[in-house]
Structures are given as structure tokens and as C-alpha cells.
Length: 246
Image (cartoon, rainbow, N blue to C red):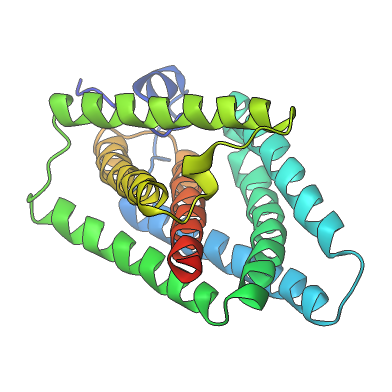
């Protein structure tokens, strides 16, 4: 059996190996695409709502942002440990992330007019570009490629955790927020790593369908891909804000 190795923590070989297989009900690429489209619609609808609340000057905006972020994290943890619940919880996760992204995006857009439209365009443009590169074989998810991207992703995660811990003591990590040359280079590197994670996710989904993963994995894989897309969007938004400040 081919190995599933993805830097996305919710899409790994062991996840598929442990899943119960039900005869006649298996994962397909088309089914995954349909589920992903539905989740994106849910996310965008929630984002439009929280954006509207910001535009109206509602005092609930911060509550929507914080609640969406915390709720999304909790729901993600539930899905990771209860994968068979993905068909029911993934839509709720998309709504929670939408509330968070809509509020945060509105705040960024109030400072830099048009930045959100640029970030959305670049995110979907990157998604399409990575899909084309994957489908044409220009970039292949080889074991070496997977190892490199995994190591880079892990390093970024550790760096962000350290930055979060230091922020509790009012110490800021300059690379994350700085609009200087090194801050911009750092953001470019993070955006690139996030984009490369898409290649691994595409490969995992294709192999999952080929090996007959259970039907509910269409929802689980769609959720995993959304995790990567949300990360990519936020990093692009951060990069654009640095470029605007500079």
C-alpha cells in the first residue's frame, strides 16, 4: 500500500489505515470536490455575516472573531479524533472559521482598502496553480519532497508557538509582524510552505480515493484541505499587510 504522508496533521497514512471500510461506500475525488465546495460556501456565508457586523459597527465583532477561532479549534480537534463525525461537524467548523475570517478580514480591509480581495484572489490563484502543477507532474509528492515540506511546516509551527508564548510576556517576534525586508522574506517563505502543503493534500486525496477509503473521508479530506487553505489565506493577508505598510 502506498504511503500517505501529508504535512497537514489531519491527513495522514495512519488515519486511512485505521478507518473502517464499508463495502460499496467509498471515497471518490468528485465526492470530495463536492463536499469541499459546500464547505467553502458555508465559510463564505459566515464570513459575509461577520463582515457585515463589522460594517455596522456592531460590538459583537470581536466576540465573533474570538468565538469563531476558539470554536473552530475545538471542532477541528473533535473531527481529528472522531473522523466518522466529519459529515456532521465539518460544516460547523466551516461556519466557525468563516465568522473568524470575516471579522479579521474586515479589520484588515479597514486599514488597507482592497487588501482582502487581493488576498482571496491570490489564495485561489495559488490553489489553482498548485493543482495544475500537481496534475501535470511538474511537482511530485515524492518522499524527499514530503520530508522537506514536513520539516519546514513543523519549524514554522514551533516558531509560532514560541512567538505566542513570548507575546504573553509582551515580547514580540519581529519577523512575524515586521514590514522590513526580513519580515517580508519570512512571510514569503511561510506562504510558499503553505502552498506546497496543497500538493501533499492533493496527493493524499487522490491516493485515498484510489485505495477505497470510507465514504465519510470525503468530508474529512475536505476539512483537511480547508485547514490548509485557511492557513494560506491568513499568511497571504499578513504578507500583503506588510507590503502595504512598507
